[in-house]
Amino acid sequence: MLQNINFKKLYLIFALVGIAILVIISYLSITVIANASTLDLRIKTFSLYNMLLIYLTPIFFVCLLVLSNIIYKKYSQSLYFVISNLIFIFFTLVNWLYISETFFHPGQAYGLMFGGLSIAGAIGMFFCIIAIFLSALNYLIIKFF
Image (cartoon, rainbow, N blue to C red; front, side, top):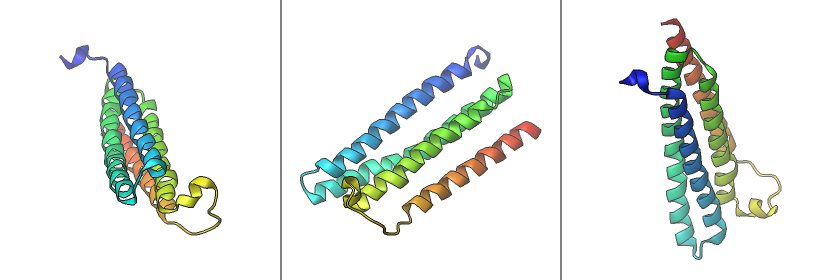
């Protein structure tokens, strides 16, 4: 039964649906920062969308990585590992460098923040480095074992 499945199409469909979901959540996170009527509503709604983005991005990455493993075993193509990493890096950096920064420093959205130190960018880059390392380790394990 698994021999009849085209995993490249499945990967493409899953990637497009996942990207669409993450884009919608990112958009909702950004719009709630600017359009929420009360501070309480703004914090609660942003926290919900941000947690969804924080949890769904790695789950989506792991699912794409599993599909990448299957594609590598079946078709011997490693490009899908790189695509999975690029998608994860993009959404992680957008979340940590832009969305979280805009929430914690609202003046930044209007160009009113000059200077300042934030650790959110370092956290996002740290997650990206971990994802690249895990993906490379996964690729080496699947290639040599």
